[in-house]
Image (tube, rainbow over the protein chains, first blue to last red):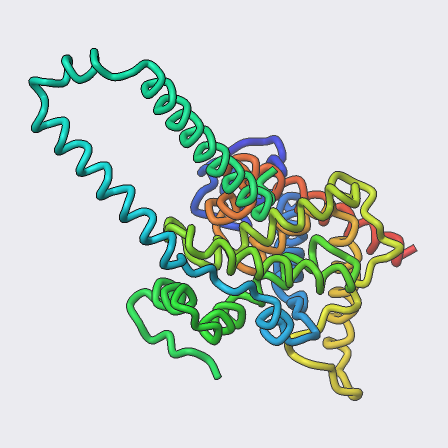
Length: 148
Length: 199
């Protein structure tokens, strides 16, 4: 049996779940009236907290919130058509490249540097705008959740 | 009219209905979770007028982000998480997070008891319980908003350390340590109060 009084942490643990405390602690508790009194203090405290009145709103939360809800954004048919066109165009270009694979080098050499430049600028601009849009959407969602 | 939730996964069923535009299903979600939200908001925010704005803010966030809910936790836990973050953000803005909570503006008496008003011919034991409850409530008020919320979630809502950790984003060890300190402070405060009364 331990002669020193039980640590505050173990007293709390005993009151919450006696099965988790060490055997020596249990033995000490059986004989020490001071520690038994500390146990009773915590028992009273936990019972007291458990029986405190629970908080409730004094207004109808649903009636307050429902009219404020934003309308769900529906994906517009134009957007769907746009995405479908991009997918089809990508498919056609891929098909063209597969079919003309052996002539690609020749094609590349004959293409004007102006056209390559134009394509590159459009592609970079497109990727840039998409990334910026993604970043903005991500920032807005984080802001909404307040995960600061 | 509430939506029937007699399904194997009522959370998922309700969320699907909300995502399909059924606002009544969202009213059911509010009804199912407002007790937890109230417990947390009351423990963290003392100004009644701010609570109203906050609860509105919380449920609009829930509605707007419902599509992103991944069912990794219970819906109520996720809503608890949004409630906690919203309240923490409010406390940070008002600089009330760490200490020196604005007790002068405290309106804890606004808490509506679930069991209703006590009859006028209340017995001695009821009076004793009421008095003890008031002393305990006052002691709770002296805790920081975070400690107060943790005590409420653990002892009143009977949540596990792990669930509280998910809601608050604190590691389980930190939750245990904060709770240990909060209980110790409460006990010491109560003992001090009783000693004062005895004198």
